[in-house]
Length: 271
Image (cartoon, rainbow, N blue to C red; front, side, top):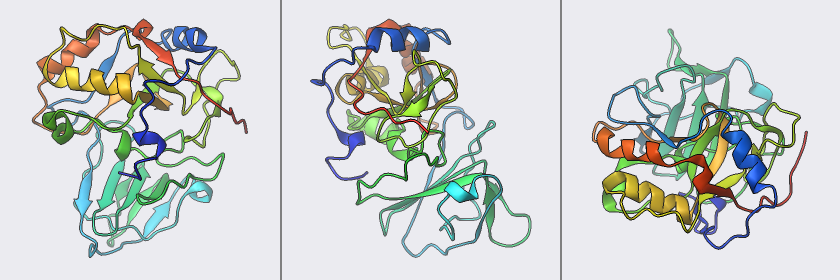
């Protein structure tokens, strides 16, 4: 997804370490201290998505909260599109015919008619590196797309994740760095901005990890993970799939936050 030179697809293994890395890592770990796969084999664990053809009918979308920062409908959302369990109720729709991604937050199917309602929605042209307008959110707090950052079973089974991974922190700074465009809640600059990228340190020994967990860790060394939302610290997000081996993924719970470092952030933007 996205062009090869898109930030999500960029190898950051040789990037410089941010001078505030230790402070950011310490404050992320105030919420939790170990990595965790926020996905697995249960049907309600992880974020689902649906792939539709370019001929999928468009339906009206009603925004109930953040319409001024949302991309207007219609969207090609099937009536049977899966809705994320829990409180966020994300709906992700990939139009494979046109390479366009449609994402909604707090979404629900309208009781009458073919449309959907949601708090916010965003459209991403997967041929483009264009970002959302600065200070805009998306279906994710940081203004980022969700699907390109999910750990997906098919890619792990194939042996490699070739993109950065979405993850959450318990608190983010009221600031952002690109490719994010929206901010967290804290005025304390000791917290990392939304969009900050971490990577697993090159000297962290992953030789004893196996299977799915090893594929994830290899990706975190090469592509890293990007702060996308508030939640439990160190929770990386994956797609719902019954084929996940939960015992294998549990190996990730032994990786401490101290094994990560923040790559140089670049320009920090504030509202």
